[in-house]
Image (tube, rainbow, N blue to C red; front, side, top):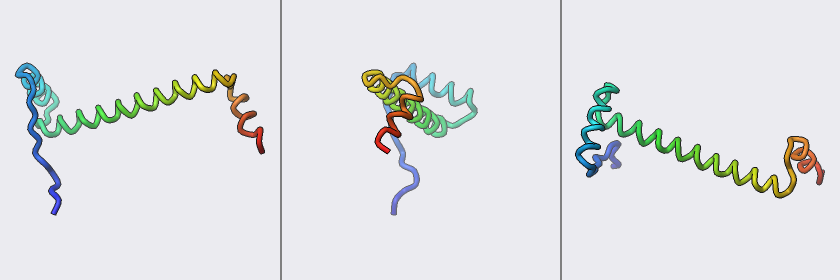
Length: 81
């Protein structure tokens, strides 16, 4: 049977451990709650960065094809229909 929670051991510099404990106390959370929230925020930031990178790539490709406005996009979409 699969466990719902798994203990994780991390090694961090003592200054970081102290900051982490102070932050958990200031947020009125235990260290496990704070860690889960931090991982969640990190994942969200990574997804946002991936999205922005894709957006930059798409914009670059559009500029190469002189697709600069919504009208250009519509013309391209309906071109083969």
